[in-house]
Image (tube, rainbow, N blue to C red; front, side):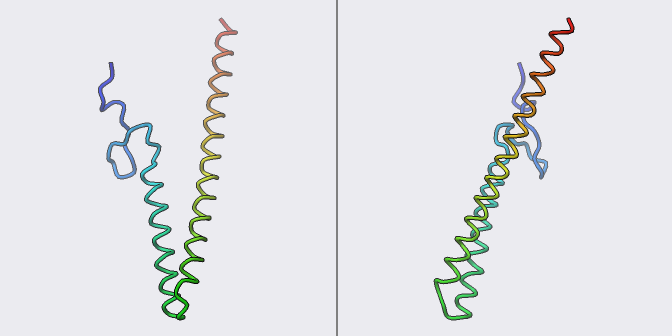
Length: 100
């Protein structure tokens, strides 16, 4: 039986992270901060030009669409990596069984 400390891995800051979290908290913070930064930039540009909602809405939409596209590419790459690992395990399992 494994203790809970042996099932944890360490994240970027050296703090224990559950193995199933897959850095979801970091991704969520990345999305939130990106949207917040673009919201702030849009508000600053709008107040400078006197066009309040135009750049704010445009930059937030740009950030949201870009973030979700990036998330899709990261998801696809992760799934391809997992599928390749699964194929490698299957090939290794069949080659070990065939040599016995």
